[in-house]
Image (cartoon, rainbow, N blue to C red; front, side, top):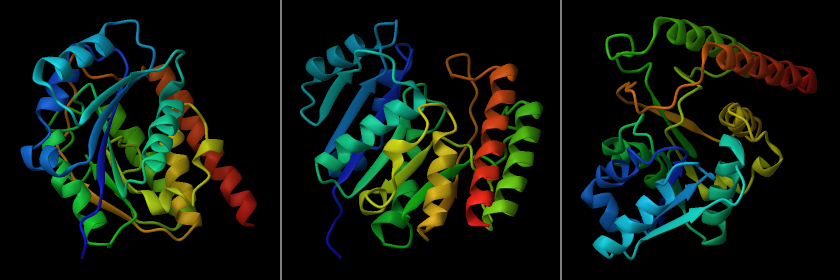
Length: 244
C-alpha cells in the first residue's frame, strides 16, 4: 500500500506558552514522514505567531509553516481554514493538534494508524477510554461529557465513547464528501463533523489518550459549557427531524 501524504495542523489561540512544546513533542518519525506541519494562529492577542515563526527560523525547519488569521475565526472557523489548506495541497491525511498541549502529540502515530491502513475515515482520541477522572478531568465535565455522549449515541445510532475530544485525524477523501464549510464557527463544529460523517456512512474510529488539564490548557467555563451542551442538543434535534 503506498504511503499517504500526512499533514499536521496545529490550531493555536493564546498558546504562546505551550506552542513550541506542542511541536517539539511531535514524535520524530512523524516529523520525518509528514509533508508539512502548519500552525494557524487565530488572531491571538499574545505572541504565539511570532514565537512559532522564531522557532521555524531558529531551527531552519523547512516543513514548518506559520500563518496568522487577520481576524478571529473561532474554533470551527479556524478548522475550516486548516482543512481547506490541506485539501488545497492534496494531502491524504490531516491531524488536528491543539497548541495548548491539552492532547498528547506523542499519540499521533496511533491516531493516524487506522487512516493509513484504510480502516477508518476519522479517528478521535478518546479521553474516556483512558482514565479521565484519575488524570484530572473535573467531575462536572465528566458527567456532562457522559450525558451528551449517551444522547448522541442514542440519536445517531453510534457507539462512541466520546464526541467532545479535539484530538482528531481525518482522511481528506472523506472531508471532500462533507460540507464542513457550512458548519458553525463555534465549539460544536466537532460534533457537526461526527453527525455528517455518520450521515455519509463514513467510518469513525477511536483510540485511548491521556487526559490533561493544566493551567496552560484552554477550558471553556461552566456557563459556556452549558450553552455548548444546548447547541449539541439542538444539532441532534435538527438531525432527528431531518431524518424523520
